Image 1 (cartoon, each protein chain N blue to C red):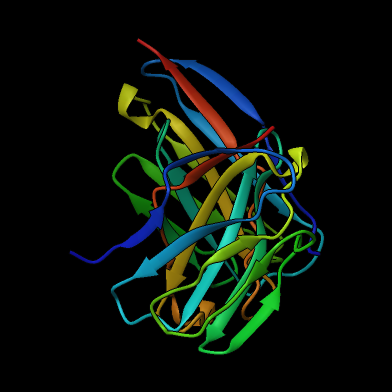
Image 2 (image 1 turned 180 degrees about the vertical axis):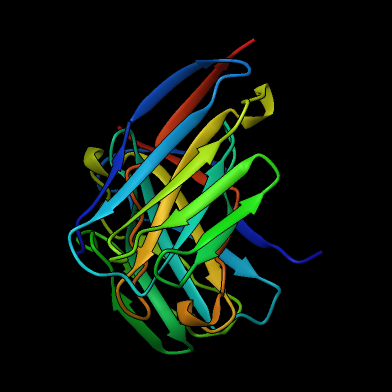
Amino acid sequence: EAQVTQNPRYLITVTGKKLTVTCSQNMNHEYMSWYRQDPGLGLRQIYYSMNVEVTDKGDVPEGYKVSRKEKRNFPLILESPSPNQTSLYFCASSLFGNRLGGEKLFFGSGTQLSVL
Amino acid sequence: GQQVMQIPQYQHVQEGEDFTTYCNSSTTLSNIQWYKQRPGGHPVFLIQLVKSGEVKKQKRLTFQFGEAKKNSSLHITATQTTDVGTYFCAPSGGYQKVTFGTGTKLQVIP
């Protein structure tokens, strides 16, 4: 089944403790992206990647890192989490990231992160 | 980043009533996509609009793209409880960056 898999689904941590949220897709998509969702603010893009070893900042990249060493994986790293990073996180992918070609984004099920 | 306003933020309707959400951009858009997120779920693609003035229908859902390609709307006719969720527009002014609207949360009262 074609899907984007995120883990974990829920995560509670403490300020300053490094964490990684994993994202994997099995559709051979070149484009992958991370979003955070907060009430009243919608979905805001954190980082995106057009292909292996190619990453770029979205609208809210501060406090986050990403890597794209393999095509299928795009982990989100919080080196020193803070309470303002408490949020619902979504990973998404699309074939080439070419919106003009009518590509849609496929989303993972989300990771609810709480930083105490 | 690109400024995208989506209104209203919340809407409660009686089942059978119509519903409309609007997405407005400060800049001209290449295209716009719409997504639906059910409660507790993840966003799911609904449709993409590309041409100025374009209108597309999916059963009870009607999507429009403004003539100036700066705004879009989603209209649901005769809402049902299955329409409950948050609807997001996702305009594109360029290539890789995907900016989402703030979303409209629809509640349908049976």
